[in-house]
Image 1 (spheres, rainbow, N blue to C red):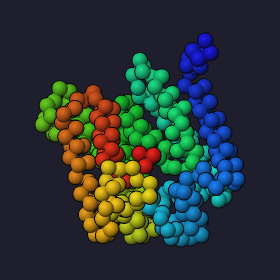
Image 2: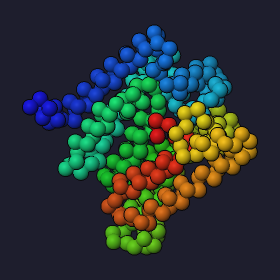
Image 3: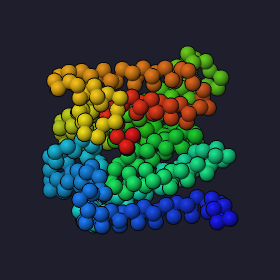
Image 4: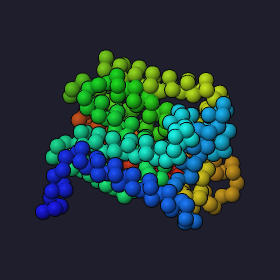
Length: 308
């Protein structure tokens, strides 16, 4: 009876409960970080905060070693230093909850309760309250799909460009969104022909990508392009890597060989994503194809951890 009552609560009530769970975990984080050797806070959160500190001191976030993100993220984290240290985790938790609400609105009403698997998922709860920015990326992608479903293609494009600015991998969804804007009952080849909706979406996406990217370049200079963009094409990180290439990387100590392996790892990813789109092409299957593309991309990603 109690379980049924819980399930029948509305989205607002579940979002509120999830928010309080997030707040509890953030408070628990303070205790664990203070008294235990193994810290709850993600090291990336420390990097974000340090990047914000450099930014406030008139420098760039990239003066902090291992900062490889958009400087806009460091801007978001400045209240960590000006207000209280857990602000960023609270902000990311709010994005987490917004993501759950978006799932509720995106899903067919027959399956709408599945949004609870997001709001109460221990993995998503821990990732956001540890201070990982993945919840921000996920929510922005969900916002793109939500706007797409509402036929708000300008807003969808702006959000899509902005999320690519934050992290490049969502660009794999671009062909799916493009094909979904085709005329009804178009063949796969016919769907390649541009129309007004596609042009609006493309221009909006480029606007959402170029404006924050140019702003970041003006703020930080060429080091932004090197660290936030180019670095990820030859990145090496074997300490928490669960990918299929983990052992292969360990077998070769030569840095040049490892870089070649890293670049070759893109081939099966791109090949599978390219194959999936025509196989499952359907104008009404946008959500399904984006999921499948995302799944194969991260399954064969050369650097895989619990966040992916």
